[in-house]
Image (cartoon, rainbow, N blue to C red; front, side, top):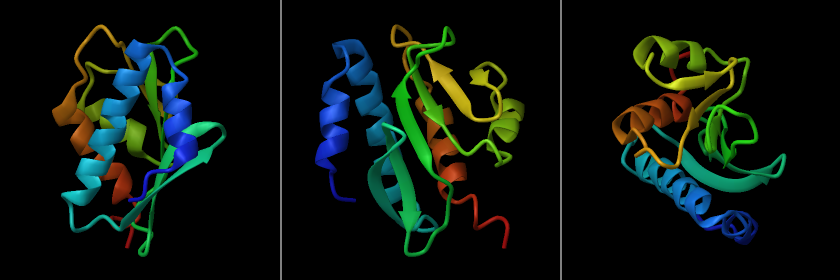
Amino acid sequence: MKDTPEVLELLESHPPDVRTALSRLRTLIVETAQGNERIGELQETLKWGQASYLTVRPKTGTTIRIDRDRSEAGDVVLYVNCRSSLVSEWRGLFPQLTYGGDRSVHFKVNTPLPEEELRQMISMALTYHRKRT
């Protein structure tokens, strides 16, 4: 994956604690994609003003977006398509996490990110279309 200057600029615009958490989420997404041969080539872009990650060649998964959380649920948030079954599946696997409807999972910056759970969630999102075939 190539770094996208617009995404890096966006991440830098956040307060330090939020920037650190979003940067860690970004790293987890990239590492998970690189470590799983079932995941297609990853592309980084801006969608709706949010750092977004999608697979290309082949299109194996659904887009993941990360951003500062503007709700009361957390400080940073990971979004997926609300039409997917991902958040419902994640709720069953990881009931201790905080979810927003059918499209997001929320995290506080003063608490370590649940990296093992996140790696599984990211892998599920980036291979979402593979399970449907």
